[in-house]
Length: 228
Image 1 (cartoon, rainbow, N blue to C red):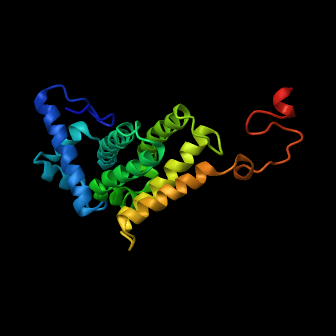
Image 2 (image 1 turned 90 degrees about the vertical axis):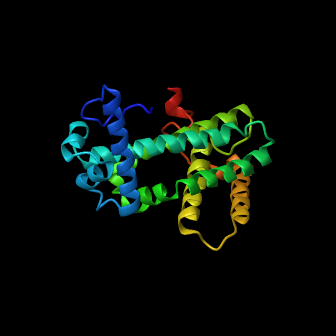
Image 3 (image 1 turned 180 degrees about the horizontal axis):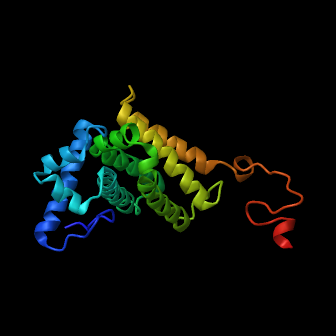
């Protein structure tokens, strides 16, 4: 059984209580996806979970706490699946790895399409931003590790290239899954591969223009101020 969410008012100690919390979270997920954020009241969630509002409030102080718990649960699942997508393909040649990873990414996003729609189109960004960003960081760390281990040349510091690539591909892929443009999937994947190759093939001198900083340190830690 999953670890109890950190937003609980109190942790369930008995199996019966833990099962009830799981029912509440699953009911909240279904109500959010099917009816939207505004209609997902605690009463609706309690009714869907077949528990009394009083029982719900024993563990969750309000709707926001339930929302955060659901987002954290979903984000953890997606993060694990995306990590597996990359980890399972690390032994492939680079060109095959990139293409296969993007295919796997689209599979994961398609599987969770309704969740993506909920997070990107319905939920107040200020309430969930901190709870979805760790997925990007987790994937970026894995991409950065791959770039380092594979000694892939990058036009930026490895962590910066990983950050840029993950967010570029993620945002394009999420929009592709949600908007379903008139672009064949294989064509879309091929364009992502080209974008990635173009970034990795860029020369550092053109990717990071020199900026005159006579009195201070440069971003890489060099320069007069850094040496003083």
